[in-house]
Length: 250
Image (cartoon, rainbow, N blue to C red; front, side):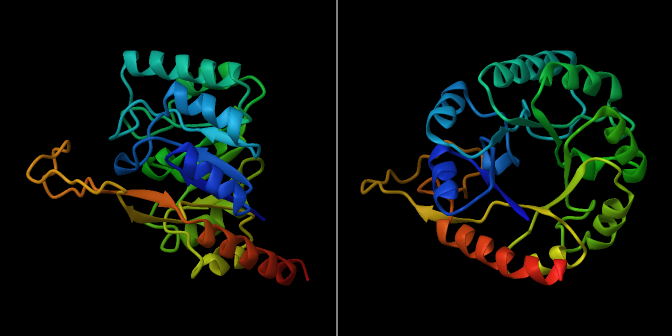
């Protein structure tokens, strides 16, 4: 069993590693569901984190149907991540009919070289998940991160089970709402990799707090707090997995 932790900073990635995470998905912008991390973050991750780090390549929030300029940016980012020596990359794209964008994904697979490619939750927005699974298998992706096309993976357990049984290649990794309290449900159906943010909101360390000014379009957004990985939660999840795994193999 492997536990991948979604981290929105290098500090969080270091916390997750210390707590026993098996792999990091490195992102920026938690409020948008994860965007491509900066070059500075990528460089620090290579220098400071020893477990596998798979950066996400996602140039903007919103849907997964990209313009020509978006795609050129994505290709540049994939090439940069490969050249920096990362173990893998997380990416996904659809066409305007909600199918896997096969032409562009073939280019991405070539650019990725020896990196393991995870097709992210764009999968959960596709029109036909079983057809998509077959296409991604033919492309050679290493894994698919999915909630079973539901708002959270617990609701998506029926499709996750079907995908797991149907997959002839990609690892089916459950993500979205995976936490300590429901991990056993994914283990019970045979899922071997779990993806979790394992996080909480922490208050800012600033003592002076300017009132009435915000950097966010949402005036209700609390800028004096931020989302962080909770090391104790990661450690608890890993310990629980260690206890659950023997019962599956027995």
